[in-house]
Length: 322
Ligand code: ADP
Ligand code: MG
Image (cartoon, rainbow, N blue to C red; front, side):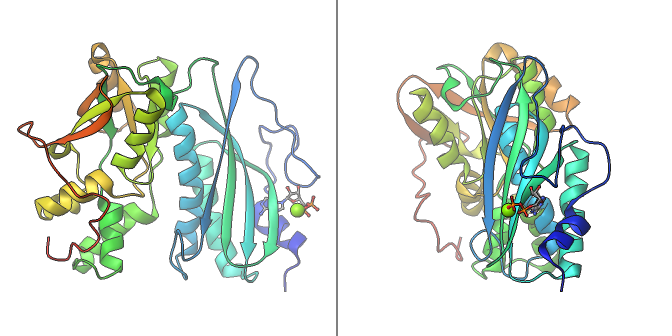
């Protein structure tokens, strides 16, 4: 049986020069932001049976727990620097730990984000990451910064992760290929780090948030913080590849209120449209304009013809017949 210290040494301590002045091994890590920069700090916790199924693939779990944290940095426009990892594990299983670390470090290395410490304990499988990024003062993409007249933009596509969940739960029938493809969106989200950086660096966007709990709810956080309302064209929402082939009612539902998308929703002045599309192209991210920030409070959902839509978003759990 591995001791706690062997486990950390074997799976999480890496012998390579890092950004931190002191990494894993002492009571604290030591980390300084680059001169003149602010630190952006966020934590996200994944709990077995709540955020992922028991028995979930360890490599994908390693990817996802860091991806959801990177997504928070992206939504702020911050550059990833480092993270800590607090792990509760029912047992020290080498195969599980190896796969988890491989998934985690593959994504960490892609973003130059260094593991600088953490905590390890026995317990029900729980993964908590705290991530540190940096950005120039005044450049953060805050939730309270939307302005009436702004366009509302969405990165990538929405709804496939929620569709995968519906398939796993047998609430909706998907064939194996569709289930696998949608499942990849659920298990391996792509944090939009390069896009967030481009939007913040050049001050192209006003407010931003990452869509983790469903667009309508998350956009609602921007509206509440910014004291504004919005009109959202539900039929303009970019559906994921698998969802796009499903009936309209399900498309609307899962695009507007799916969850687990980890795309960015941001607001920006209409004068920035060309520059924003260029930033999307440069970061390899599709961008879609889906609505407008209004001075009048409330969120108005409309269809492609501009007619008001009365979607029962919260209560729509029994959609097997959609
Ligand atoms: P303490 O006794 O202060 O709780 P620990 O014995 O928990 O310290 O940890 C020893 C070192 O290993 C610390 O530097 C800590 O940050 C690091 N560490 C512990 N668990 C992890 C982990 N899961 N991933 C990365 N570093 C870890
Ligand atoms: Mg400890």
